Every structure is written in C-alpha cells, then in structure tokens.
Image (cartoon, rainbow, N blue to C red):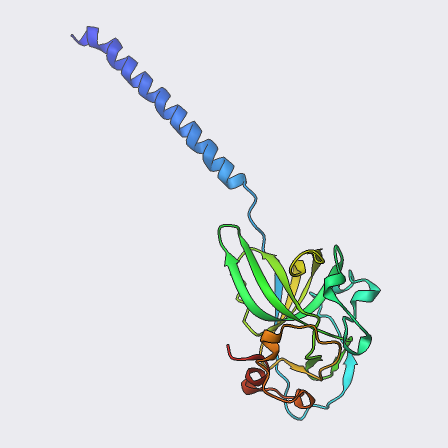
Length: 236
C-alpha cells in the first residue's frame, strides 16, 4: 500500500505546489501593479501665521513673495503681477491658458477622495501690487468667482481665509467659472490680511457682497480681529 500510494501522494503534493506557485505569482503581480501605480502628489501650501503687532510703523510697500513662492511668482507675465484695483481693469473671464497668481477668499472646499482632488470656490480680490508694510492689504472688490483644483486631499485650508493661487487657467469664457490648475498656494488666515479699500470694478457675486455689514469707506482696519472678517465676509 505504501509503495502504491506514494506516486499518488507525490502527485497531489506536486499539484498543490503548482497551484500555490501560480496563486502567489498572480497575487504578487497584482501587488506589484498596485505599488507601481503613480501616487497623487499634493502641491505645496504655505500657511502665513504671523499676525501684525500694534505699534509697528504703518506704510506701503511692493508685494514681496516668500522664498517658497518666488519660483512661481517669477513665472508670472508682466500683465499678471498686478491683478486689478488701482492698477487698472482686470477681468478673470478673459484669461485662458495663462499662468496666473490670483488672490481669492475661500468660499467652498470640496474634497473628492475617490478622484484624489480638492476643489476650491474662490471669490476673486483685486490686487495692484502694493500692500501695507505690516500686513497684507488688498481691494475688497474683485472680478468674480473662480475655481481652483489641487491634486490630493487633506490640505487643512480654512473657509474665509485668503489664498493666492498660482497655476494655469484651463478654461473660462464658455465655462461657468474660470478654473485654475493650482501649482502652489499661499494661505492667510484671519488676522494676517486686511482690505485696504474697495477699488476696481466690482464683478463679484451679490451673494457674497450681501454678507458685508459695513460701509465701503470703512472697509479698512490695520489690526483686524475676528469680528472684522465676520462683518465683511460672514461667519464661518
């Protein structure tokens, strides 16, 4: 019996070994494919956190990009350094396939985990290239809403914060809103930016403007607190 059963047992073990080899090969191939799939690489977001200290000298200066921001700032064309306000008319709906650096208030944040993308709805704000020495200051008026798409999720952006989005406009004109494919974002939370005045042709949404509760001549405050933003932008 032992001699007769040996070939059968050996055959069974051989078949099992072949099965395990094929299964492991398939599983290993799937694992390798999964590992080889390119991961979505998030872009850099720089968070400005330093708030102005009372007693600093008030004055005006040209906008100075940060070290991280500098490579993207250099990519801007001459017509894209100043984006409206006292610098002249600027219409975001006329831009297409242009590299821009737009300021905007974060109105909506949508994260699509399946797609691996973050979409921002932003209220554009004009900027003439000049700001306060102690705090970022820009116009309360703007050219309308636009969207920005960022690869990946989990950026920890804040609603009603101010951002400057660098990237290429991938569509406007026929589209409902211009869309910027973001390459770099700089983020100012409450207390780190202010509105200097309401300059430039207001093309923004009436929905957002109705949230403002102060006279446009009183829009400026050199040392803003939370109430400052709530009275002008609405509550978070």
